[in-house]
Image (cartoon, rainbow, N blue to C red):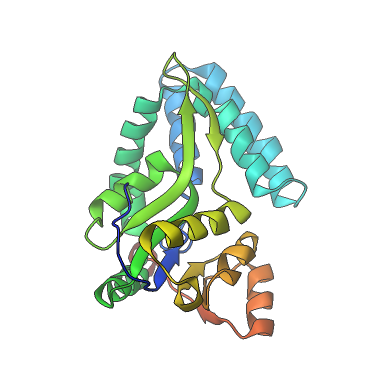
Length: 239
């Protein structure tokens, strides 16, 4: 999505996506969906690779033995390289409509709209792959000025080869790039996220807001007196 250019310095409002705007892990939901479909379609090789990813690599991640960038690269290597990008994009649109859309936080959508109405640049910066984030940005293009997400590079076969992961310090790099492109003042800007991996993302701006934070981020936020928000998605509230 091409950023909307502005000629004067204004605040930016930077939002993580998974577990910040969305009440779940979008790539985790995608993995569940692809795993089920791989069995139904008789793609047992992909089914086994995804089982290996879930039971081995995800366990290492949960134990803190590997980081977010590593597990994202492994997922791209094991899973995405088996599926054409256009099929991932189509599946992403269906997943958003059927599964992810009801799990958006109404409060965060209102927060994004409020920033937009105040003239702030609303930007989503996420490790979520583009094909999973794009349907959300398309729906809310009236209030979302730009996005930065994990980009999947495709080979001549049309199959994904590797990804450019938007995680950790790369999110702060994206903030500085948008500040230059859109004429933003980071010293008056806002950042929203749930995860302790995004400390640099938060520290790049003046107003730091944590949303349903991980225990590690909650501890940091309390010590530094950052604002903490807690929400439930409408679908969760209604169950």
